[in-house]
Image (cartoon, rainbow, N blue to C red; front, side, top):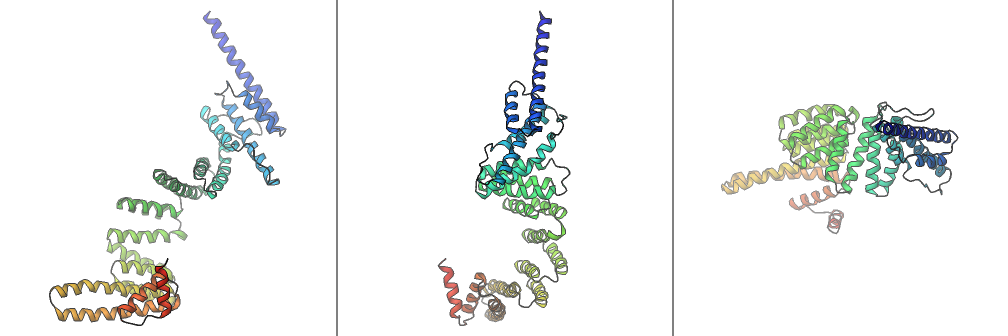
Length: 398
């Protein structure tokens, strides 16, 4: 009796396998004859009871991928055509993954795609669908498809730009996660990008800001070190600026000065960057050093707005430091010292006014500069031009 039962089970298994093989042959023939619709129908009839057959899943992936490509081609020919199988590419990808899950070495029939190639080919359609959903602010759909695109793309070991491609994908996913109010996924996507050593600098900028918001200065330093290894020379300037901000944040004046001196030489011909270096010096109360960078920049371009503005700021913020000294002199009733400090402050404010006004002549539409210029004129009891007054008044109405 037991022997009969075993023989019956074996017979049933062989029959199931035979049916599956026969079905796959029929489906394969349909694909060879471009009868994708018929192939799809036959395949779905074969699937029940054969869910553990890796070859059948591989065939299914091929059928649905071909179905997606055919419908896409019809839409290109006729823009009014509405795609019927909107989930075809998703089903194709799931089928390829299932085939590998059941049998990592599953082989396709002649003329068909293997599972790995099929998964990789799904990346671009996923990307296109995801970007379209993002454009239409369909955030959940966008996240779903772009995340799938990233998973498929990671399988492509022959893509020499994979670290960059994945970097931009994970950047998009992080921004979509923000729209979905998913801070954990936001962080996870940025970290995924670092795992592939992406050269995309924006990834490291966002992670730095995230760690900074968490008051994690150690990780801030680590992410800068990682970025400097992965970001190419033509874009590393963004990371170099970040490093300066890090030194200011951690109060490491020695490293800040060493870094700015090095960058001032490296970017000696960039007036705009020298202005940025000067700002870091001003923010750390190193006014003479700020002025030296600004003078180098002005030698390159004397009409640069940022350089003239920053020179004004350099003197304005130096003048602020005198206020504490004057408060101390008043407290000590040291009137001679107080008088001396007031005179020095006025000289410094006059210099600030001169440079901020030069910046105003170059560009009279900069809000911050205009407000500061009016403040300086009032402080120094100078006439405020009506044009300047009107501009500053207009800001109050915004």
